Length: 454
Image 1: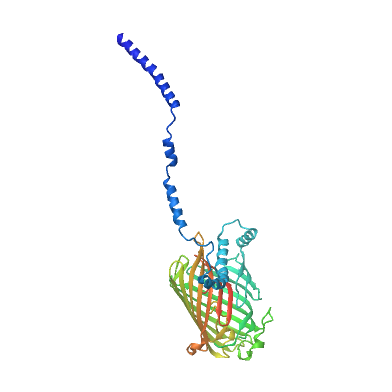
Image 2: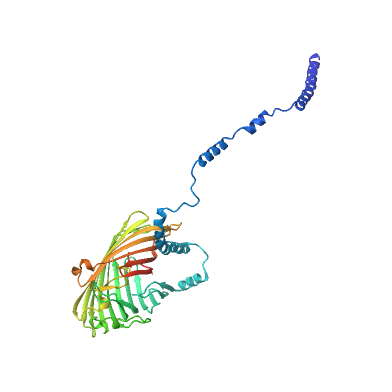
């Protein structure tokens, strides 16, 4: 009992002291002013980050700041005319193709025109815009009926009056091809400057209407080797140019010395060729080499007293520098020889000029029996879409070529140099188009093509 009471007393004493202690603490806090030294120290303590910013500002203020617009120096003076000269090339050959490629690759809801085009194509008819359907034809609109494949009908007319209408059948797979076709074509405004490497710059125009009926077959012997052969008939007629007031060859040249200008000619033709393809496709680039040799024999029939043959060869090489740069090289030649009779029609002679042989000269600028052309291109990628599907390449072109009666007769003064710049728009599977400027001693050639020889 005594222990229990002492316990109770101790518990009471504890309870009674606690309120007194709490009250004394409150009185002390209220009577004594608080010690603000800790707060003052916190307020006046320097932030390390502030010290760093202050030091950086001090160092920066010690520098001589450049003006908002740097003063003009000799570099600007030298660059200005170069920028002015390069502006149209950059706009036409880089900016414009890049913008067009971007528009092509952008996914969007198809317009009514696109839906109508797809409907016609699904039915079996394809309208197309072609950059060329023959010599100096200009843009052409073509309709292709392929609903009844393997039979087809194609019909085209150009801005300068050239026409091409053909119908035929084509059977093809990776191993072989068989075809037969009948075609009537009008080349409305073909240029002719005369014969020889030193022909005058005065030109005359003519039109050529001809029928061409042919049958052809080809086979791939190996992955790299292919052969083909064919037989055909052609009927040619030459006249004044159409749809133009430009001078005719009958006004500008002595056509009595041009066989085929004043008479119709008809030939049976036998031709064949072989291809060696050692190229490989890697991304957007070809690598390796490609070779082609072909020949044709013409035998005059009916009133055509003329027999001749022609042999041509092409060698192309592709040398990548890296995945963005590449060299492309091309050597081409053609030899035409009379086998008897009146000779070779002037429109079947070998020619130099245009995208296939001399970019800086107009198509068929130089004409003679034999032709030799050497071409080199340096290509450099300037744009690629984010999906790695298409790209634009800038290219520099250099070519040398000539014509003469015989290749052995070619001398140093016969060679014609041409230069060029351009842009190629390509996908990994195919070429979309090429825009170019060609330069030579005779002026500038401007063009857009859907195909390219290199």
